[in-house]
Length: 234
Figure 1 (cartoon, rainbow, N blue to C red):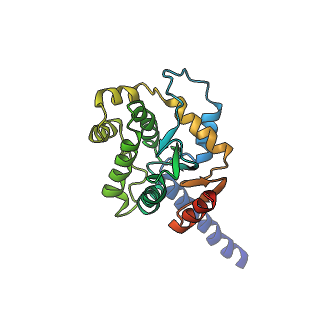
Figure 2: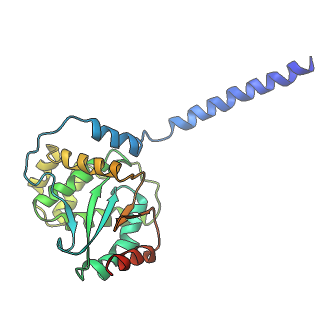
Figure 3: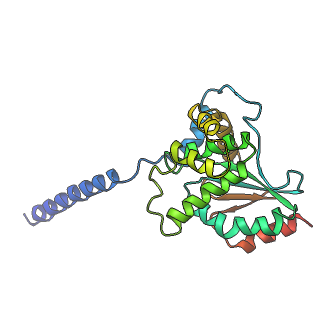
């Protein structure tokens, strides 16, 4: 009889734990994993390329610079925003502006639903030769209004087409042309291409930086990137 008294509370405890786990999971954002997004891009049918710039490389700096820094990032990623503020800006001062290296930016839109339009916006901005201005404006907006304080809004739908169009205008783009570009998903293939490259490069999270074949994953100190660049420039 003693065993029955022990088993019953354990069963009740099991039901309680299952219930609270279910309720907790329901509160989580419906977030796709990076692997899901990569596979989706890989298996999607080939989209019609509507512009000869559709798959153009996104470059920060002098395209002829000897060393390339490949940057995989998501505008909604808190650590990507931190990288831009604490490392990216310094890299641009020390290496990019001096034409020693260039950054090749590749989009990894997987954090939230607004990651994708923000990513496609990079190519829409590139159509107007203002990718760098758009890139900086979006990162600055997210950092100043959200991630400088905390990361609680990471999964909120912030970078809507309307907000991105507003930011594009502030960055000096033609808002009407930019909005139409986003609305028609003109550069879906370009972002899918970035995702396919990320899978080939073994990217599992952001930021993911590759310098001279060496990957630096997640937020690291500036010296880690500086050392790799100095070696590559020898």
